[in-house]
Length: 266
Image (tube, rainbow, N blue to C red; front, side):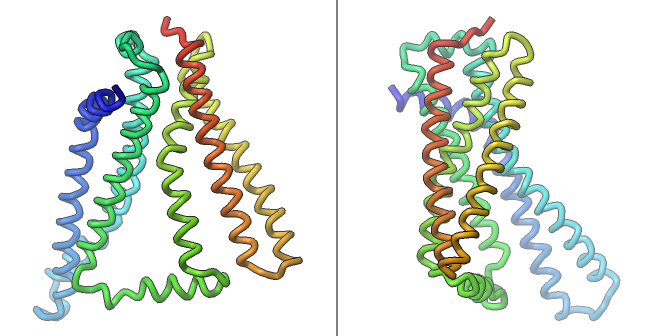
């Protein structure tokens, strides 16, 4: 049944995501063309007004492209939230909750579809970066800069990659479930349920930031005694990983409980 739900949710969301992803792909190709024109302008007329204009336009375009990149990530989350709200707690929810499936299966389906679209977005962004710098990678010492940064923190690259990758994977589930839980809590309000969801999210965000700051300070204090930046980093990342896992489980349980036992669509 979960497979059928995934297929249904994929069909209901691809209409939102395909135009967004195609638009980003076209913007990436155009950016590559402009980038190559600017890099090759020295082979043509020196300091010509035409190429100076192309250069200015390219810098402006790349600025807008970066804004569009950020907007794509934001819109990915917005589309996920919109689909969950529309199909689970709005008028459309009457039809959704009449399906012969558990509420937990509905939540899992929404979460997995969210993870899928975030992975697709990350892959397309990665490919666009490779496309942009294809033929010029040796001129950009990214890995050298990264290695020096990690060495300055007294960290091993494999540890950094492990913790970063693990937290990124957990966040694929944590982020949508956090939004789902806030929307579910908002449904407990008799009136202004959207406002209730927004205030819940703000409250959770403030709480987690305060807690993270406290842990960061405590970890920093321990770093003075152990005199090791690796101890500081590893300790904080272990906390971040455990907190993300706990947060993911709690958000799922809250969402499942409210939507299965406390939901009132009137």
